[in-house]
Image 1 (cartoon, one colour):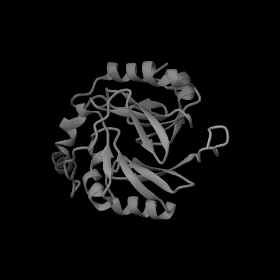
Image 2 (tube, helix red, strand yellow):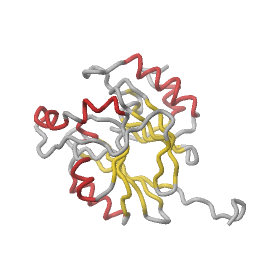
Image 3 (spheres, rainbow, N blue to C red):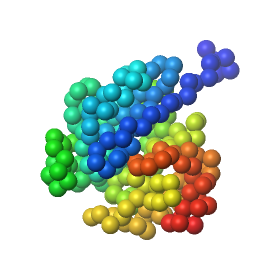
Length: 220
């Protein structure tokens, strides 16, 4: 079938499942036509995540990680084992965080956390596919050394983790944080993609790049 006669690609849908005491946005994304999708940043509370998967009626083909903090990756190892799928992301510079998830769990009083190594580390310029949709990968360090952003150019949509929030940016007072690098990543890599880009972040409500470029006090 030629491109001229091919049916339009079914758009991705998304649902947020808030997990952990940090109210992290674990995100389910899926193709509504095929009901195939991915879990993004399973930080914990697997019962909630599985309930969200069941309610959406979807089959998970992979797990995506934006970075290695416990509220985003704390349940990734267990979820991989339960589903029998692979983990993609973040950048390998977050290996030091993923290798110490159990210690993070002890520090924050979150039981059952396991260290994890992704099946695929992601680099700037890599591509990730989810249910037939292709995401461009941007390495955006600052909140963590290996934070990545997943960008779907066809749908003008990004999963930004804790790089950017509505009205704020990721914390950089953690070990390995770098405020200047974070701001540079946002201004030089994300904002040039366009003001119309909608995003889901790691905490709080979704937003749009243009609104943040104009009103975010950390970026104007």
